[in-house]
Image (cartoon, rainbow over all chains, first blue to last red; front, side, top):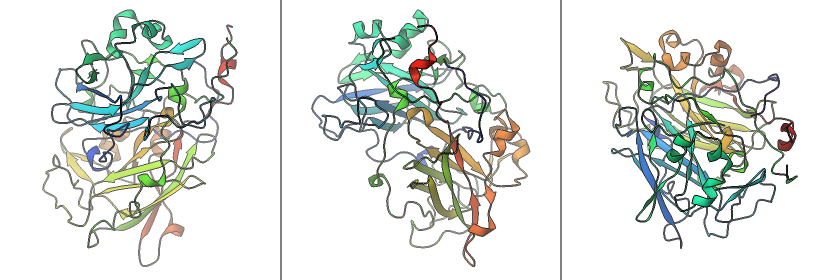
Length: 194
Length: 242
């Protein structure tokens, strides 16, 4: 991690909880669709958010951000250029509130490998979790179970205690993968300071 | 180093600004705050990029919360405007700003809010807009009321508007709350006081700006939002061990 110099001029605005009423302002109809329904090769990435007592969190919101299947981002700060994905309608971004069972689900395509300083990062999603009781959003990553080799060489997974890595690897499912998010306690998901 | 230039961007990590996850005075943190320390995630391409929203994400009246129903909502009409900036003062253009709030009586249009204050048939309480080239945004709404909650004995939330911001990158993502000046409820509110630095707390309070009021129509509050700034040095120069 780098150290930061003295703060110049403006201070950052602090985060505050999204609270129990986030559904008024944040969800929108097609927000869980990172790719349009019916996209060839689309998968379902879904899971349950649970609290420290194992109770489903029914008032959370999950957001994901990911590379396209070629491992690129259509963004001015991708040094390879902001190149549109070959997948029609690919957004890279999805947002889904949890339901009464604490469940969320996205429709997306699997991202490609993303460059790192020395080599590659395994295919992954950046995940943000918002909820009542979270004074600032939580950040984690979801990796894919069918990428054992890439996962074994991923610099983020490699930096974690071995017994915690598994919390970031989704499990295979009928039509995609399941990625449960445990906010606290046994098998607590790894959360990041980014 | 391979010499591969991964990015010229990196964001500063703010210290002492955001609330801790574990804050017992806010009871909902008890079973939701992670018990393990956060792991450090070095910023790489996924963290340094983020969704780019276009005007198709925003409807024509989305920035006027008083215009979503046949009649006008009850309450004090206000203009809330400001800029989205980075720490060094540079504007963040094209940032998606989303807001949601209670009505003038302090009641949310939400199934789990059922305290005995009236709903307003002319107020939903959600808005969104994109910042312009100078990072400016502007909403028209009504001033939300305070409301009671069950956190502690006779607990009341100070009046606030929820703000959600996308900056340029996943790393700049921010959800916060905007408060109003001189609210007597600040002292007993654990959410406001969860921000450790008193000076940082003040940055969540909007400012009454008489010059921005609209005579015979609306009062005006200014709320600038500062997102994490970019560090000056390129990525690879931060590694001194290679």
